[in-house]
Length: 489
Image (cartoon, rainbow, N blue to C red):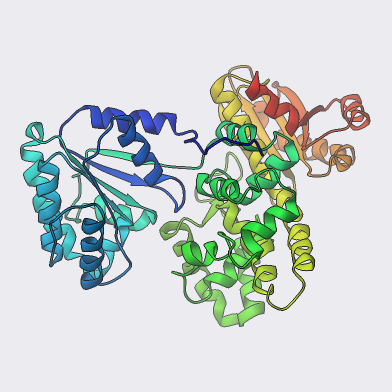
């Protein structure tokens, strides 16, 4: 790791610009920031406020508690921030927010979704009255309120449902997603190396969650071997990510959700029928009736899973496939959870080797997502050799035609079919099936009959003999190394 380099703020240029514009207005604002836990919501606020040298701030993390617990936590934060005020009720908290905002404070309430709980729901009515008062004199008020939340459905219920007290009250909204690949490459360039195998390894674990990369940086393992990184971040007794999934993903789940997620982690892209079959095998036929409800909660409330349709399919199509959306959760459930839980009973080196072997299997699926993400980013930035006009997607049908990626450029009437393999040596053997699947695709999709057809093969590294074999078969060889290099030019 590069010595003497401190951690920096990475990516988020558009979001940071938006926040700075909000602050620069110097008038009342009510900003909603949403995104998964650890995605960098608080860091974004800190960065924006520091840039404007705004020191009148109050940050409160709302606990998953009752009104008494919330009031106690708020008073603790007031003391920490050196403020003399104290509150004795949820109504008092709402009124205090109004008073502070009138004094040019920026107040941030984190984990705001907990106010959706029945025992705390009165707070939103109290806050509505305060927000309406501030909105009426917005030109006289230079402070603002920021609410941050990590459960999308509950944030939506609090702020966007027509019957909610705070409906239509926010002035601005920011949705934080993962860091883009370009920002992850900036991190690696500063603290590790740009080897494609390292990018895939870290992307499979952390995707674009800045907190996880910082944890690896703080532990000094961003540039370490796979074994050492896994040991320091997951297996040691003081590992920062040892309990991450349970604390921030799984603790709120009940019933059979954990088993369903376990199955999705090891069977990405499975159908509803396959899930029902697996749950029936594990828990008996009676469990099948509950699968639809489980899938809906995991998808809509927690946004842990997604149902993908083949390109051109109607929204009502029954051929959807289910995936865990978050790389960290998928890697944890698919490879790390069981070895980590057994670390008190078996040799650590043996368990780490077992986890790493499973991670390499999971990485095969992560490579498809990473390649699609890079294609999309290249196109958005005007880089690479293929300008997309349609989001890169996989394709499959009931006759077992399956293609890892299908990219469309409607302006130039070009279509590209892509196969992805973690082991490049398997690429030449996959070309015949890729072309056969592509021909069946084109036979079913007549509008592409006169389009230019490309074939491409992607792996982390592609040796020259393999590259030549692919080119001889009319296939573009694209290593992750070459796709990464486009960013740096």
